[in-house]
Length: 468
Image (spheres, rainbow, N blue to C red):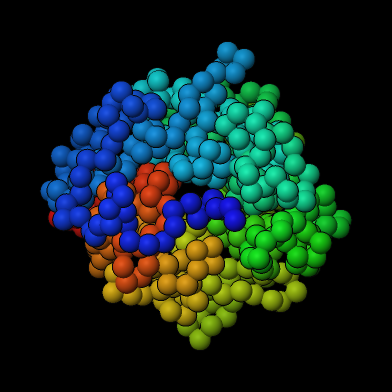
């Protein structure tokens, strides 16, 4: 049996140095020694020091110091390709780079790049590496750090068109959106246009054309995926083509951001994310590359998807209308939410919530036991998902709940739960048992760590009374 991406750390009481231990009384400094860090940014270090001074709670302060730089400390591999920056960002405990995770992992550093040339070059390298990956295969979700290496062990027998450099080939719509988000955020923060060369432009054209193909107006398209597994979430039905959809203008996604297969393949949070991303891309194509044709195509596709979402992705409840999680265009709707981002809960975080009132109703639904993947126990409450299973809360959902909150009475308890869950190791985990945070998965999950750091900084500078 192999461990999948989300199953690297088995459940059980935390063991350190071969000894079974409980939760620590205090959070310790868990950063690698300076000489052992993969990358050091003077701008990030100043930001950490300045932010930490504003946090009176010593436990929260140390968690922030541990988590915010975790991506830079442990996962980045700066380099060059053809004389230009080329940066690999590993997800943590798996030696591969996910398009989604790598974008999200470095996102909190983007506002600091304008004043730090070394950091700016690192981020430029991520953008360039993502463009290279998209040109290899826009249907892949993960790529090897060394593009000449064979795929991840569990993907080597998958029945799909596996190309050299691909780590895993689970087509996920959000994997096409995240590189746009990073590129757009980088451009707006720095004003730098160097990464947006002919290779990047071609990669973005590939993104738009792939989305068009996956509207499936002219048949199923070229993508199929089959894996031998005893879990239905690891493979696609209908000979690898996915469950049927009616081509109504939405974009098909084989898998969710959790890397679990979709039930109804129009994944609503990813389609909402795509609307935002396509409009950002249209702006960049018009302003930077002067590719008006691609800009117009991206804008047109965004409008078409948004109209279709309003028509097919809205569910009616006794409390009012909410966004469904997945639909098929035939009228079937799946009402739930998953902890991974994009999620329905995370829509405002991604600037992908076009209707504030509907989001508020959707938020109330997904953060309640009406959502089948919402769990509440003696150690906390939050959203999980099928990837780990019943009664396992994902701290990422609690972090997003706090990041998207406008109320101290929501964000404060979420922060308390996150601190409790992190005491075992001084870091944020993938998931933990709802009544025992010492039972968790993944001790090294850089995205969750950096996202937590982003959330704490957001509170420090925007809602200091929430952490007082």
